Length: 462
Image 1 (cartoon, rainbow, N blue to C red):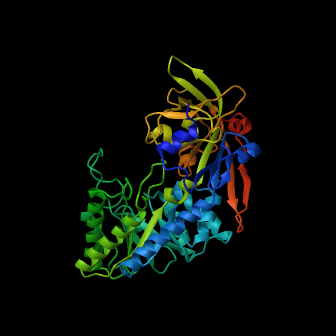
Image 2 (cartoon, rainbow, N blue to C red):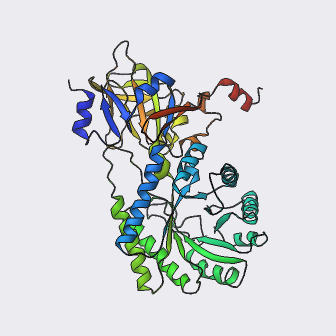
Image 3 (cartoon, rainbow, N blue to C red):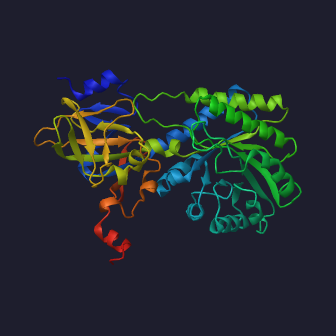
């Protein structure tokens, strides 16, 4: 019978720059994962910090090269979308790369102030404030504007701008989010977020143009399904840019478009996405529409979140038991839960890259992976490009370890990190992996596995 590595090499182009096998054990970005397991045990979440910098620099290179190719006269500005992961080690790694921040909650702003106190962030860097803003969010924005931070509130409705009239900033630069149309198969036609197209010009004329307190700097655009080479995406981007050109002719202060986030990440070994082509098409289309309308091209902001941090993350489990529930359904039970620790796999049927950590020389078999909770939906049984999951056969006395990769975005926040999880399954330990300038690997335990005392306190028993 063929080995697991034979299966992978015949199915995918393997090894890849990110995944290699040495002595029948998996390396993730050159990190020998069995060494990490031997030191820390499972279940375990890991964050490989250099991947964050790698993706930021790659995006900057793509946009700057495209602008140079088309002689585009605007500038590119990279913002990190904090909601993808709020952890301090993520923000601090990202901010090493001369980037800016996009927020969506009142509680993002104390994080920005904490980074400023630690000298990780400056008042010269942009803070793009998105979202529908409750009173506390508005309060924090005004306080930071008064304190000299470079805040750009992105207006989500017609009334929001009134809240920024009374602060100590001499002038407040604002953006307007445009409510894009959703894909045809969506349950509704237009995004609930942003200002509809027909209200953009009246909003500018009535509340911004003649008010010396405000300058309209930015139009904001976001498509939920991301930046994809589809007729829908190009149609919405073009519609947005025509509105920008219309507004630019009456508003000389307007000089920036924010095209939001949406760069996809690799969630399968057969992932194919032409980043270079997409960026060049974005630059070329924006430039063509501006030239057609005789307006200067805008600066371009992006707000990449998943792209920044997603591929830095992984979750590693042990197979703690096998159960043959009928003639053909073999279950590998793991020492964790998909519902609590990889909620996207359960909630939206998201597929991640699943690979064994060890035993690559062993024969393989079809399996279902089962989580620890009592919920019947706590399982993982299909891959992104396969209708089944195959893993090495576990023999008596062996422990099989499995990893889910590119899990670095949203899983902790959606799962409620450090809180109360289904069946009181504890949050796993979290290990940070880094490299020094010489390439030497270092590890740090960011958080141990959640204990019962913390749960009892949350539940009111202590």
